[in-house]
Amino acid sequence: MGTRNLTLLTDLYELTMMQGYYKAGNNRNVIFDAFYRTNPCGNGYAIAAGLDQVIDYIKNLHFSDEDIDYLDSLHLFDREFLEYLRNFHFSGDIYAIPEGTVIFPREPLVKVVAPAIEAQLVETAILNIINHQSLIATKTARVVHAAQGDGVMEFGLRRAQGPDAGIYGARAAMIGGCIGTSNVLAGQMFDVPVKGTHAHSWIMSFPDEYTAFKTYANLYPDACILLVDTYDTLKSGVPNAIRVFTEMREAGIPLNFYGIRLDSGDLAYLSKKARRMLDAAGFTDCVISASSDLDENLISSLKLQKAAITSWGVGTNLITSKDCPSFGGVYKLAAIEDDNGEMIPKIKLSENTEKVTNPGDKTIFRIYEKESGKLKADLICLVGETFNPEKKLKLFDPIETWKKTTLPGGTYTMKELLVPIFKDGKCVYDSPSVMDIRAYSMRDLDTLWDECRRLVNPHKVYVDLSRKLYDLKCELLDRFEEESDSEEIQK
Image (cartoon, rainbow, N blue to C red; front, side, top):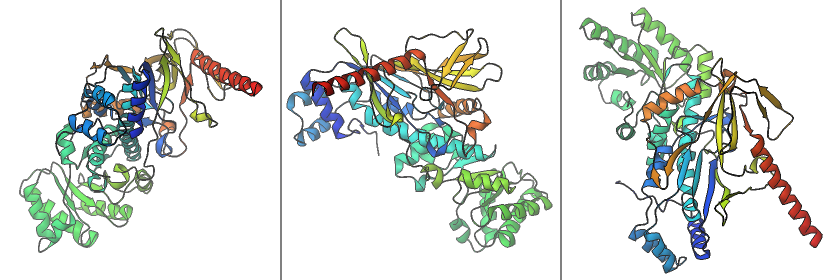
């Protein structure tokens, strides 16, 4: 339950490769990119999340005596390598896209520049952290978009896949746009709003529903949301809630935040009926919140049915991203330092086009339409390339290269996405608070066109390669083809 050393939060083959590098004397600097290939949930984008936990992990990397003893017990590692691990720490550089940023496939979310042994060790943990939180933040953004400005609360802790998934899933949900979480520990750890009402058991523990409501209202007059579906929503729950609200008003108790919650039944029908009853009693500002296995699709449907719901509590389907339970991030080698200290680009080939990697030391520029401020495209390029927004910029699809567009000079702006996080093993980045990241994420989402945010068949945002990077990629592909042909001739 206390602070954990996560250094062994890795796959065994990372450690066996590390020993291999060590024994071969092959610990030269390398570049690895962490990226993903397909947007989750059929979405048009994803949301970067988890960087703060990656920073904490890197800062605390060390092999304890207990770790060394355990690795020794596996009979896979020799004494010299284990002694090397005793003084292990991260000494390299890390660049990353800040949390809350809208991201797209094939873009390096995290770039690690470090000795091979160090870069290899951190692969699994980086992917574990970034994959999970980016997935939940993205799912949340879909739910929040479906709610069309209504507040969405995360309360999936009891259905999350364990404590860590519940805690950091709640954090990611806040980044994705939730207004609060039911998770009290997440509230304490990340200084985010905690919210909640009461359970059906509260109602059932009293002699009658009215007494349960009245007692709760006396305890929490400034946050009085009453669960009205324990017995009969329209014949009992709503009338008893109205009775309690009326007594509060007559007693001069300010109704600052009050309402009802629906957790079962036909939410569209019940909410509209309840709204009429509440309005007739003079409670036109009464909140109607809903739960009951909600997700973005059900919320969209209820919106189309003009359900009178103004607040949404989303649990299982959000915290687990039930319809898309994995993010699919990968970590691939992009370059290796040679004997002269020059980074030599590397490429991974595949019969699947989307699995062919982009080589070299890269960064990303985001291109915005100057007039509207909307996102136009992303451009992956080699580090050191420069662009002048006052000059025309030609973009082309790196797969279907005949698809081209030219942006006239003065019509666009550019922003580099990757920022330094670690330099020479020292953290040089201050993580914002979760609520500040949330606010930034909401602003970044607003740079997307509406067509890119729709839940079904969203418009694809273009992620292009610079001409230099594209030519480098083609050069490596051609070189491999020539080498393969030469080998065939020799045979």
